Image (tube, rainbow, N blue to C red):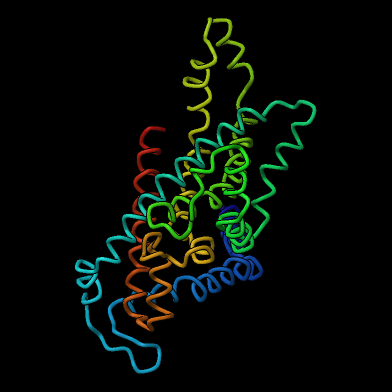
Length: 308
């Protein structure tokens, strides 16, 4: 009996030892987990925290920051340029985001079939994505000149009355800037939707055809529901790209003329680095972050609820 008890105790200690060794995380695994977390904290979270703190101060970049609490945010309420930039940003998000999603999905639906020459069209639509926005803006700036390609084309086809100083007019500057940004974004959205369309089971469409469903019914009841996860990715990308759009606007108009194409991003840059009001510029950056996080979080919460 004593022998059996001793053997049982030794087996128990052996099992506990094996469980302890199995639950112990190897140092190499800890290093692979902790090092990226430390890098993320140093390069992302700490600057973000510093930016929020600076938004509560008045700072010119040289002297010590002076704490003003919510003074910068109260100033925004009476800042007419901020209100204008906010309206233009919302308009940019609606036009740039909506058109890029619709046109990108349309291009993906047209080019999803493997036919001869389709790869050429896909590459042509995606090619602008590999160009920098600054280079793209410079090309379009030359096209928008009074003697540029756009006005010359309009004159050549008998529409000379439509020639216009596109970037110099307050009524058309913002819309003229949206066009090159949209031209670059459509190809990227198209690729995302192409990946989503490839993942839809063709048997669903075959069953719908047997039931007598038309193209529109197939698109509404099969394609759109099956692309719900892709829509979440596209929406997130569009919102982030819309709120951080800076290169193309700054290269073409710098927010002018008379702030008619001013976005929150360009106003933040000019306020912080030209007027040297880094505290107020940080407050504008916080507003941009809150807008992006709020819209994306609300959509994802609704999408998860619908999935459940």
